[in-house]
Amino acid sequence: MPIRSLLLSASLLLAAPALGQAPASQPPASQPLGGPLVPGVCLLSREAVFTNAVVGKAANTRLQELARAAQAEIDAGRTPLEAEAKALEAVADSAQTRQRREALATRWQALQAKAAHNGREIEATRAKALERIANEAQPVIAQTYAGRKCGLLLDRSMALGGNFANDITADVVKGLDARLQSIPVERERLPEAAAR
Image 1 (tube, one colour):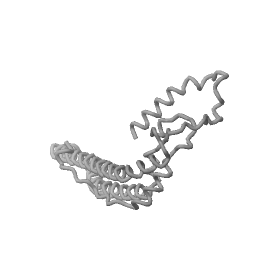
Image 2 (tube, rainbow, N blue to C red):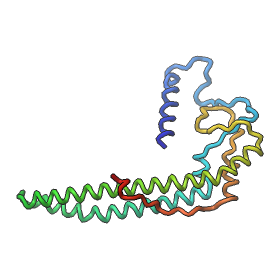
Image 3 (cartoon, rainbow, N blue to C red):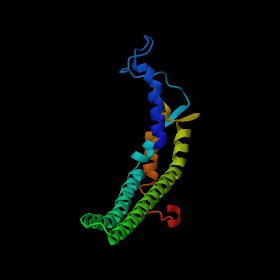
Image 4 (cartoon, one colour):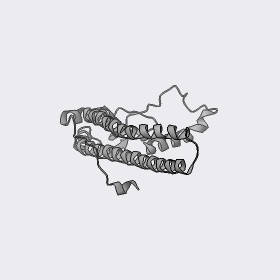
């Protein structure tokens, strides 16, 4: 996603001069760019494959479940800490109160570290699932590429316009759906040392 955001930002910067007054040779913004079909040049959106394929939808649903469970772990630890913090606000300042506040701050830091660690585990799980789907999609992409007589395959998200008739994304999704419906997605467990 960060790369996609960067690309979007770059394309917006490139488009910025066109936001002023466009030269007469440029088509109006409402007119699609279109153009002739370029034989042998095909387009593919891997992101759309992951989003639209049945296996991608199933993996995404499972990742959401794992993320909710990871968040529930943090919420369960946060509730008593918040209650203790509120109780300490009402207590007069003393050496014992400061000591309790320091201990509470240490537990807050530990909970924050656990939340960050859980986030890294969920991200590692997502990356592993995407890698597995990409590996399963690769033979389908190769077969579709050959079947459509492509000589060059470009990432569709990089195209700013043109004739998208040689977009093989839908065919790849269909082929991947026929090949695979789901994959096992279990939370990756990272060593605690990785959290530091």
